[in-house]
Length: 412
Ligand code: HEM
Image (cartoon, rainbow, N blue to C red):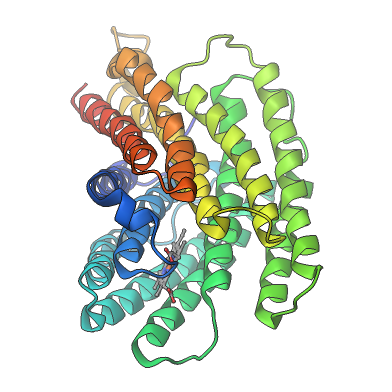
């Protein structure tokens, strides 16, 4: 395997297009939060405009970035080509259009737009799940990452079905049950966090040059996180009051503790002492993950001021926001370099990865973006417009610099 590229990977335009669209959505959502943050963040859970921004982030930025990265990483890590690159290309415009209709439907409070958008998006996600699961199952390699990919895909299917049902319930009041907590847990814990942990187990030791530590407790972490998410969903679905959800939430919290211990060991044994902006952002993301696990457990035990909103904001803009930015700084320059210069390396002068973008500017982003999650979560919990707007500004600066640097990488 050569870093994050091999002959199994699709043309780099496929992951790049998804990742660049994701960054554009992150900037649009950041702008909405900056302009209208106080109204959006202090909404009662379920406010339509807030839902529009939530899904601009979760589908427009997070899902598109994760899907683009998976098209690159699954073939490389599991040494198997995508089942159908044509299907991957065809689903991109459908996903963008579905998400666009859904976000516009929420923003304008127009069920006639929201419902088709939500169902189209859910369908595209389910097709993606089938396609990627088929690819993963076709791999001859029985690596631990296989479980992470398959487990997170199962939760993605669940969250898409639950999302489609929630949209129907907003329109017709059916099904008459509260599926929102299930949708949020399946999305942020079962899908996004499980996938992000699996990818971090593969990429962090590789980028930090800390080989030799193996996979740490990756298999146990998977069992605790995937099993705990399932148990939490089951207790929420059964509507059992009492200590059961709190006990179930302790399993993913234990998974996070083990995962963070492994990441700490990877960082401590790295052979490259200097942390570049991509690795600094990834390290910050892990601090946020610890906060999210603590806050999530407290929210389940109903002891956290601001409750679920605080956890959602910390998870989205802190943990996932820093991790995705950090990994994008590592993956995209490598992909472009590999496609353009790998064949000439050793025979002619080729740029170093860090020469392909403004590293000093990326350093500014790595210092500013980490503040976004904390400022937004505290601002929403304390009802402070100043904190909320400053948090949105930090997000915009972090992702704005990432956008400028990605354009520079493409032109390098
Ligand atoms: C097919 C894709 C999806 C559909 C159709 C969908 C649909 C919905 C609907 C209709 C609601 C509102 C429920 C209500 O208030 O009664 C909702 C809420 C929510 N969804 Fe999704 N969703 C999708 C994907 C996602 C993803 C990928 C994530 C996160 C990774 C996510 C996170 C959330 C969150 C956090 C809320 C609560 C937000 C709030 O009330 O402010 N959704 N979703």
